[in-house]
Structures are given as structure tokens and as C-alpha cells.
Amino acid sequence: MLLQMLLSIFIRVKVLARWLFALIQPSLNKWQSYEQFPCPYNLPSRQFWLNIKQMWQ
Image (cartoon, rainbow, N blue to C red):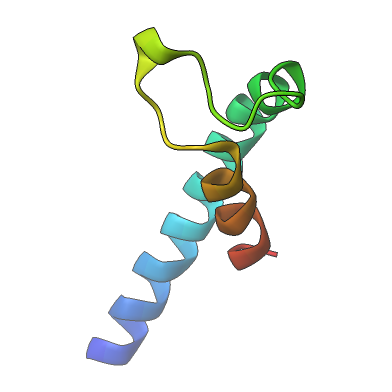
């Protein structure tokens, strides 16, 4: 029962992460030449997002 619940939560998180990544993707392409996102946003580096992308594939 608990395992089934955890599994459904995991699947939801995975779907959400893919959806979020689809939103982030254009930004990644835009800042491809930079190692980091512009300072005002204070977001993690591009490498961080690439690691997340690999994790969810």
C-alpha cells in the first residue's frame, strides 16, 4: 500500500519535472554560451540543469 503510494508520488514528480524542464529548456538554449544564468535571477549553473535532465531520462 505504502509502496504504491510512493510510486504514484514518484511518477507525478517525474512528470512535473519533465514539464518544468520543457519550460526551462528555451532558457537553457538561450544561455548556452554562458556557464551560468544571468546574475539577477541567481539561478544555478547550466551544468546543474543538464544534470537534472540526465537524471530524469
